Length: 86
Image (cartoon, rainbow, N blue to C red; front, side):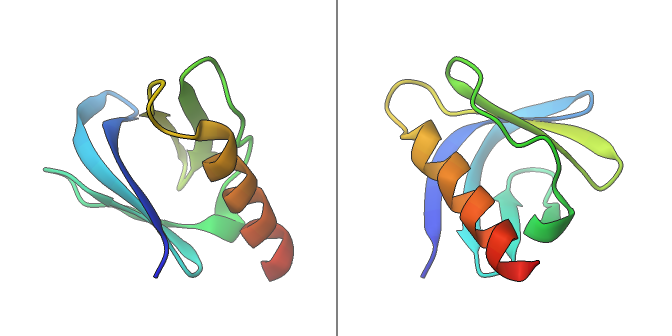
């Protein structure tokens, strides 16, 4: 079982409320659009205010986590998982 959070998700020019799930080797977004991204292919993962922006799959992703979500914990989990896969 992975980490999950309900947040506002923006991928390039599309934005929607989503359930972001960190499962194994993937970040899965459950939203009207349903992409998944290999964690090893994500770049530039960082915490910026209440958001977690990164690049993956040739586009930009931003998860607006807000104060209720531990954005640094999610960022740390993504970084640790990516390190473990390399």
